[in-house]
Length: 133
Image 1: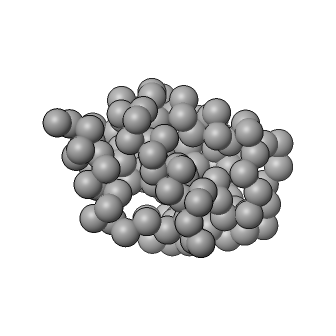
Image 2: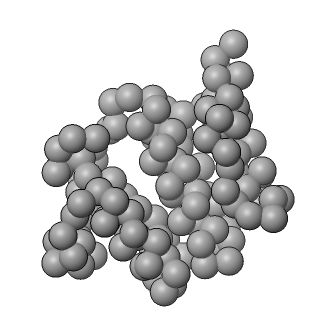
């Protein structure tokens, strides 16, 4: 991900998703802040994103879409409360991204049942590769 607009778009999508349940939990905000730092988005710009509308930008590479889906899934779990609106929203977002629904449901199930929602990157990619066959 190279351009500022791509980074901004990813963060805007994550911000919109984080408030789908009607509130922004402190841990969700902290997670978003860490992602913004990793994307090298300045703090003032990051705070301003909470007052902007979500643009419709499709991530071109499948790997990039998988990464964004996983970020959203982690965000969904960060506050320790799995809201039904979050579950519906993430599945719709994954469909809109063109990701395989069987793979995304399987990943969400693994994250929900595990001691921690973190999935090894190789396992994550393997699940998506299996659906290509």
